[in-house]
Length: 109
Image (cartoon, rainbow, N blue to C red; front, side, top):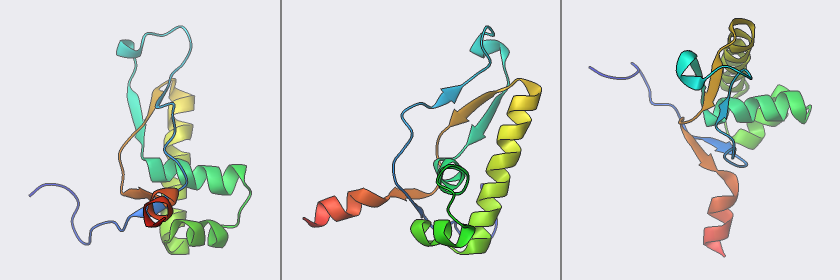
């Protein structure tokens, strides 16, 4: 049996996929670093709550998920970022269960 047990993750709405996908400590080759992976939706939760100062309820509404789900994604993202910063590890942004919010509206036109 592969993957997660239980229900599949419902897709989260994100505004955009980040252009930059790797962050690493300066002066250290990437091959010498451990890599912490953040999903696209975890980055979106950080952006909405920590940069745009939305409440968790407002951010959850924008992403089309419950507040509890948003809180779980937000805590996972913060923990991963803190772990990478404290331990001098690289951060890679990739994957996840998401849909780009503007793509649906553009297709309908």
